[in-house]
Length: 113
Image (cartoon, rainbow, N blue to C red):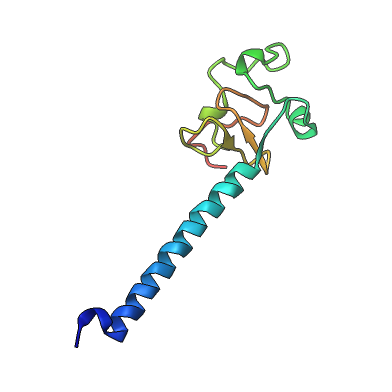
């Protein structure tokens, strides 16, 4: 019997093709979910409640004297790690923050929450 016409070979090929298509659909779907989140704006009510600023250089040092100038979303325990320009933060669900941003909920990485 010709191996290419073997029914088990055809079933295996059909299964692999379906798995590749499903994997591609999952990857595409994950990209859509990630891009569905929008960048947090400084005038967003949640941002206002946390005194969020898009640049840590704009932190009011009189209001937050413990701010040391090195605190930002890139080194905050509440923001997902990585190298992405925009990142998810547990303080602002469904929104993305910039790595150089800051808010009063900032926590140092490595601290147990």
